[in-house]
Length: 273
Image 1 (tube, rainbow, N blue to C red):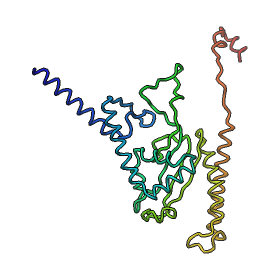
Image 2 (image 1 turned 180 degrees about the horizontal axis):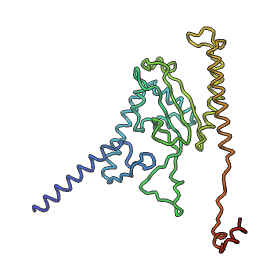
Image 3 (image 1 turned 60 degrees about the vertical axis):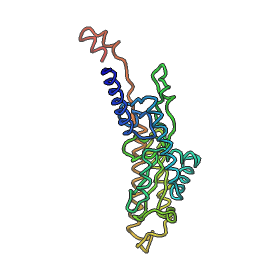
Protein backbone atom coordinates (compact mmCIF):
# COMPACT_ATOMS: atom_id res chain seq x y z
CA UNK A 1 0.00 0.00 0.00
CA UNK A 2 2.82 2.36 0.85
CA UNK A 3 4.49 1.69 -2.50
CA UNK A 4 1.19 2.36 -4.27
CA UNK A 5 0.85 5.69 -2.47
CA UNK A 6 4.39 6.58 -3.44
CA UNK A 7 3.78 5.62 -7.04
CA UNK A 8 0.57 7.64 -7.15
CA UNK A 9 2.31 10.60 -5.58
CA UNK A 10 5.09 10.27 -8.15
CA UNK A 11 2.51 10.18 -10.96
CA UNK A 12 0.84 13.31 -9.64
CA UNK A 13 4.17 15.04 -9.37
CA UNK A 14 5.07 14.03 -12.92
CA UNK A 15 1.67 15.24 -14.15
CA UNK A 16 2.07 18.58 -12.36
CA UNK A 17 5.55 19.02 -13.83
CA UNK A 18 4.24 18.20 -17.30
CA UNK A 19 1.43 20.76 -17.06
CA UNK A 20 3.81 23.35 -15.65
CA UNK A 21 6.14 22.79 -18.59
CA UNK A 22 3.23 23.03 -21.02
CA UNK A 23 2.14 26.31 -19.45
CA UNK A 24 5.39 27.89 -20.56
CA UNK A 25 4.59 27.08 -24.19
CA UNK A 26 2.40 29.28 -26.36
CA UNK A 27 -1.24 28.28 -25.69
CA UNK A 28 -1.70 28.01 -29.44
CA UNK A 29 1.14 25.57 -30.11
CA UNK A 30 1.27 21.96 -29.04
CA UNK A 31 4.57 21.21 -30.75
CA UNK A 32 7.23 23.84 -31.27
CA UNK A 33 9.09 23.55 -34.61
CA UNK A 34 12.83 23.42 -34.07
CA UNK A 35 13.38 25.44 -37.27
CA UNK A 36 11.53 28.48 -35.97
CA UNK A 37 12.34 28.37 -32.27
CA UNK A 38 15.93 27.17 -32.35
CA UNK A 39 15.05 24.62 -29.64
CA UNK A 40 14.30 20.92 -29.72
CA UNK A 41 10.68 19.93 -30.30
CA UNK A 42 8.64 19.27 -27.18
CA UNK A 43 6.27 16.31 -27.48
CA UNK A 44 3.27 16.51 -25.15
CA UNK A 45 0.83 13.87 -23.99
CA UNK A 46 -2.62 13.63 -25.60
CA UNK A 47 -4.30 14.94 -22.43
CA UNK A 48 -1.99 17.95 -22.33
CA UNK A 49 -2.59 18.67 -26.01
CA UNK A 50 -6.34 18.57 -25.43
CA UNK A 51 -6.00 20.99 -22.53
CA UNK A 52 -3.84 23.32 -24.60
CA UNK A 53 -6.35 23.10 -27.44
CA UNK A 54 -9.14 24.20 -25.09
CA UNK A 55 -7.00 27.06 -23.80
CA UNK A 56 -6.18 28.06 -27.38
CA UNK A 57 -9.85 28.25 -28.34
CA UNK A 58 -10.62 30.41 -25.31
CA UNK A 59 -7.65 32.67 -26.02
CA UNK A 60 -8.62 33.06 -29.67
CA UNK A 61 -12.18 34.02 -28.81
CA UNK A 62 -10.95 36.55 -26.26
CA UNK A 63 -8.69 38.07 -28.90
CA UNK A 64 -11.47 38.02 -31.50
CA UNK A 65 -13.65 40.02 -29.12
CA UNK A 66 -10.79 42.51 -28.77
CA UNK A 67 -10.72 43.29 -32.50
CA UNK A 68 -12.02 46.79 -33.23
CA UNK A 69 -11.80 49.08 -36.27
CA UNK A 70 -8.04 49.57 -35.72
CA UNK A 71 -7.42 45.85 -36.02
CA UNK A 72 -9.82 45.61 -38.96
CA UNK A 73 -7.86 48.35 -40.73
CA UNK A 74 -4.61 46.37 -40.37
CA UNK A 75 -6.34 43.15 -41.39
CA UNK A 76 -7.85 44.70 -44.54
CA UNK A 77 -4.46 46.14 -45.59
CA UNK A 78 -2.77 42.78 -45.05
CA UNK A 79 -5.47 40.94 -46.99
CA UNK A 80 -5.20 43.34 -49.94
CA UNK A 81 -1.39 43.38 -49.94
CA UNK A 82 -0.74 39.66 -49.56
CA UNK A 83 -3.74 38.29 -51.42
CA UNK A 84 -5.54 36.49 -48.62
CA UNK A 85 -9.13 36.86 -47.44
CA UNK A 86 -9.80 39.01 -44.39
CA UNK A 87 -11.05 35.90 -42.57
CA UNK A 88 -7.76 34.11 -43.22
CA UNK A 89 -5.76 37.08 -41.98
CA UNK A 90 -7.91 37.49 -38.87
CA UNK A 91 -7.50 33.81 -38.00
CA UNK A 92 -3.73 34.06 -38.40
CA UNK A 93 -3.56 37.21 -36.28
CA UNK A 94 -5.61 35.92 -33.33
CA UNK A 95 -3.67 32.63 -33.40
CA UNK A 96 -0.27 34.33 -33.24
CA UNK A 97 1.76 34.12 -30.03
CA UNK A 98 2.97 37.70 -30.64
CA UNK A 99 -0.57 39.08 -30.78
CA UNK A 100 0.19 41.48 -27.90
CA UNK A 101 2.62 43.41 -30.15
CA UNK A 102 -0.36 44.90 -31.99
CA UNK A 103 -1.66 46.56 -28.82
CA UNK A 104 1.87 47.78 -28.08
CA UNK A 105 1.93 49.27 -31.56
CA UNK A 106 -1.32 51.16 -30.91
CA UNK A 107 -0.25 52.49 -27.49
CA UNK A 108 1.02 56.07 -27.02
CA UNK A 109 4.80 56.17 -27.62
CA UNK A 110 4.46 52.49 -28.55
CA UNK A 111 6.67 50.42 -30.80
CA UNK A 112 7.35 52.14 -34.12
CA UNK A 113 6.92 49.18 -36.46
CA UNK A 114 4.77 46.10 -36.77
CA UNK A 115 6.07 43.38 -39.08
CA UNK A 116 4.34 40.40 -40.68
CA UNK A 117 6.11 37.68 -42.68
CA UNK A 118 4.19 35.59 -45.20
CA UNK A 119 6.36 32.70 -46.32
CA UNK A 120 6.95 28.96 -46.27
CA UNK A 121 7.32 27.60 -42.75
CA UNK A 122 8.19 24.06 -41.73
CA UNK A 123 5.11 22.66 -40.06
CA UNK A 124 5.75 19.74 -37.73
CA UNK A 125 2.86 17.30 -37.37
CA UNK A 126 2.60 14.27 -35.16
CA UNK A 127 1.52 12.01 -38.03
CA UNK A 128 3.94 13.43 -40.60
CA UNK A 129 7.08 11.65 -41.70
CA UNK A 130 10.01 12.54 -43.89
CA UNK A 131 10.27 11.23 -47.42
CA UNK A 132 12.57 8.31 -48.17
CA UNK A 133 15.19 10.74 -49.46
CA UNK A 134 15.05 12.75 -46.23
CA UNK A 135 13.36 15.79 -47.78
CA UNK A 136 10.71 17.80 -45.94
CA UNK A 137 9.20 19.74 -48.83
CA UNK A 138 5.78 18.26 -48.18
CA UNK A 139 5.81 19.83 -44.71
CA UNK A 140 6.37 23.38 -45.93
CA UNK A 141 3.25 25.56 -45.77
CA UNK A 142 2.62 29.23 -46.36
CA UNK A 143 2.05 31.04 -43.09
CA UNK A 144 1.31 34.62 -42.07
CA UNK A 145 2.82 35.52 -38.72
CA UNK A 146 3.90 38.50 -36.63
CA UNK A 147 7.65 38.88 -36.20
CA UNK A 148 10.24 41.14 -34.62
CA UNK A 149 12.26 40.70 -37.81
CA UNK A 150 15.38 39.41 -36.07
CA UNK A 151 14.61 35.80 -35.13
CA UNK A 152 13.31 34.24 -38.38
CA UNK A 153 14.95 34.03 -41.78
CA UNK A 154 13.22 36.29 -44.30
CA UNK A 155 12.44 34.30 -47.47
CA UNK A 156 9.01 35.47 -48.61
CA UNK A 157 6.96 38.64 -48.26
CA UNK A 158 7.19 41.23 -45.48
CA UNK A 159 4.18 43.42 -44.77
CA UNK A 160 4.94 46.30 -42.43
CA UNK A 161 3.10 49.05 -40.58
CA UNK A 162 4.96 52.18 -39.45
CA UNK A 163 3.91 54.79 -36.90
CA UNK A 164 4.17 58.41 -38.05
CA UNK A 165 4.01 59.94 -34.54
CA UNK A 166 3.91 59.07 -30.84
CA UNK A 167 0.16 59.64 -30.60
CA UNK A 168 -2.10 56.85 -29.43
CA UNK A 169 -3.56 55.04 -32.45
CA UNK A 170 -7.34 55.24 -32.25
CA UNK A 171 -10.25 54.13 -34.39
CA UNK A 172 -10.57 57.66 -35.77
CA UNK A 173 -6.91 58.31 -36.64
CA UNK A 174 -5.52 54.88 -37.59
CA UNK A 175 -5.56 55.63 -41.32
CA UNK A 176 -3.59 58.87 -40.74
CA UNK A 177 -1.18 57.63 -38.05
CA UNK A 178 -0.20 54.30 -39.64
CA UNK A 179 1.59 53.72 -42.94
CA UNK A 180 1.54 50.37 -44.71
CA UNK A 181 3.96 48.77 -47.14
CA UNK A 182 4.94 45.46 -48.77
CA UNK A 183 8.48 44.22 -49.26
CA UNK A 184 8.81 41.17 -51.52
CA UNK A 185 11.78 38.87 -50.96
CA UNK A 186 10.53 35.74 -52.72
CA UNK A 187 13.18 33.00 -52.86
CA UNK A 188 15.44 35.07 -50.63
CA UNK A 189 16.24 37.80 -53.20
CA UNK A 190 16.60 40.54 -50.60
CA UNK A 191 18.65 42.96 -52.72
CA UNK A 192 16.25 42.67 -55.65
CA UNK A 193 13.27 43.17 -53.36
CA UNK A 194 14.79 46.23 -51.70
CA UNK A 195 15.83 47.70 -55.05
CA UNK A 196 12.32 47.29 -56.45
CA UNK A 197 10.70 48.72 -53.31
CA UNK A 198 12.87 51.84 -53.33
CA UNK A 199 12.96 52.49 -57.09
CA UNK A 200 9.36 51.66 -57.95
CA UNK A 201 7.52 52.74 -54.80
CA UNK A 202 9.45 54.99 -52.43
CA UNK A 203 11.34 57.24 -54.85
CA UNK A 204 8.28 58.00 -57.05
CA UNK A 205 6.30 58.70 -53.88
CA UNK A 206 8.99 61.03 -52.54
CA UNK A 207 9.35 62.90 -55.83
CA UNK A 208 5.61 63.50 -55.96
CA UNK A 209 5.50 64.66 -52.33
CA UNK A 210 4.16 68.20 -52.06
CA UNK A 211 4.21 68.75 -48.30
CA UNK A 212 7.69 68.63 -46.72
CA UNK A 213 6.68 70.02 -43.35
CA UNK A 214 8.60 73.13 -42.34
CA UNK A 215 10.48 73.18 -45.66
CA UNK A 216 8.37 75.66 -47.60
CA UNK A 217 10.26 75.35 -50.88
CA UNK A 218 9.51 71.65 -51.13
CA UNK A 219 11.30 69.88 -53.96
CA UNK A 220 13.14 73.10 -54.87
CA UNK A 221 14.98 73.06 -51.55
CA UNK A 222 18.66 72.10 -51.94
CA UNK A 223 18.58 69.75 -48.94
CA UNK A 224 15.57 67.91 -50.34
CA UNK A 225 17.30 67.60 -53.69
CA UNK A 226 20.46 66.28 -52.01
CA UNK A 227 18.39 63.75 -50.11
CA UNK A 228 16.63 62.48 -53.24
CA UNK A 229 19.98 62.32 -55.05
CA UNK A 230 21.40 60.19 -52.21
CA UNK A 231 18.46 57.80 -52.38
CA UNK A 232 18.85 57.50 -56.17
CA UNK A 233 22.56 56.84 -55.74
CA UNK A 234 21.89 54.20 -53.09
CA UNK A 235 19.48 52.38 -55.41
CA UNK A 236 22.14 52.45 -58.12
CA UNK A 237 24.65 50.85 -55.73
CA UNK A 238 22.08 48.18 -54.82
CA UNK A 239 21.52 47.42 -58.50
CA UNK A 240 25.27 47.12 -59.17
CA UNK A 241 25.78 44.89 -56.14
CA UNK A 242 22.92 42.61 -57.18
CA UNK A 243 24.23 42.30 -60.73
CA UNK A 244 27.75 41.55 -59.50
CA UNK A 245 26.42 38.79 -57.25
CA UNK A 246 24.26 37.29 -59.99
CA UNK A 247 27.18 37.31 -62.47
CA UNK A 248 29.70 35.83 -60.04
CA UNK A 249 31.99 33.08 -61.27
CA UNK A 250 31.24 29.66 -59.84
CA UNK A 251 34.07 27.14 -60.08
CA UNK A 252 32.98 23.62 -60.96
CA UNK A 253 34.13 20.90 -58.60
CA UNK A 254 36.43 18.48 -60.43
CA UNK A 255 37.22 14.95 -59.30
CA UNK A 256 41.03 14.76 -59.56
CA UNK A 257 41.52 11.46 -57.74
CA UNK A 258 41.71 9.55 -61.00
CA UNK A 259 44.58 11.78 -62.16
CA UNK A 260 46.49 11.90 -58.91
CA UNK A 261 46.39 8.11 -58.45
CA UNK A 262 48.38 7.65 -61.70
CA UNK A 263 51.24 9.94 -60.73
CA UNK A 264 54.27 7.76 -59.99
CA UNK A 265 57.38 9.91 -60.54
CA UNK A 266 58.44 13.54 -61.21
CA UNK A 267 58.04 13.15 -64.97
CA UNK A 268 54.39 12.20 -64.44
CA UNK A 269 53.88 15.41 -62.49
CA UNK A 270 55.47 17.44 -65.30
CA UNK A 271 53.23 15.76 -67.86
CA UNK A 272 50.14 16.35 -65.75
CA UNK A 273 51.11 19.99 -65.33
